[in-house]
Length: 282
Image (cartoon, rainbow, N blue to C red; front, top):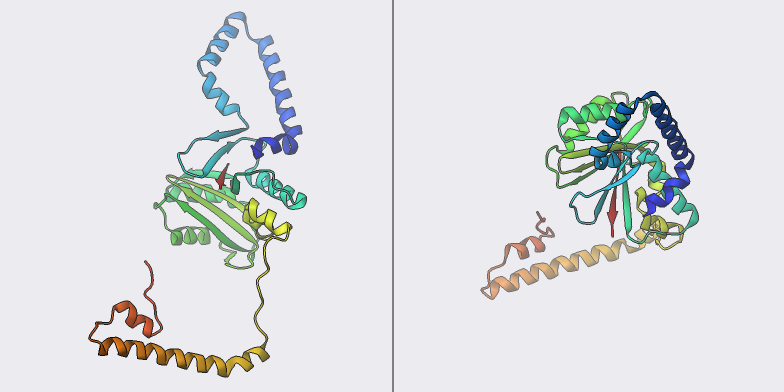
């Protein structure tokens, strides 16, 4: 898995320091405890072996029963937003995609139960020290099997927590990622320019971008071209209107009722149709 491959590369020194600290702690405890206390402690550790092993894992995959979505729980020294950015940067610089199935990653620095009070409490912690007065932000909201809190409510709560900042949909300074899944809400704050440059942490799009596989969008036509085609466009629109009116008239004359869809189409209006990492897989 891509995370395990990068874990030692990015956090090798920190992990080694944690291991040495744990070894020193065990040696100290062994010297201070009596024989009876040592036996008691060993029995307690055996009883909670499975629980302890999960808690001690720096990176742990948890089953969540969702199709094409994998959830990873992390512990220190991993900071999910920094970890994901480093991975995407490595893909960007190497121009290679070594993971076959990972499509997109969502870093979640903190998470909480899906209630308004819990979200406000978590958001205060996540936003602390991340914004300066006058900066702007955008909200990257993802809701999956989630109906507890509406988008407008999230927007209002963030506006209350960031009184000196403004919401901006394009060209914002930072992006606030909010990932909602069932009864859980996760959140992180990312530099928006970096987020956009790294294709919103979509690994496939990063690979396509750096290797020139994404076609550039065509710019607007020149004013001279618009001027030359103005009369032709007007003539074409007039002809299309006459054709539609004629079609409607023919249906009526033939004694056939005109459907609502046909009537709206003639008028030019069609009826409108009604601290964790989540990984989307292909």
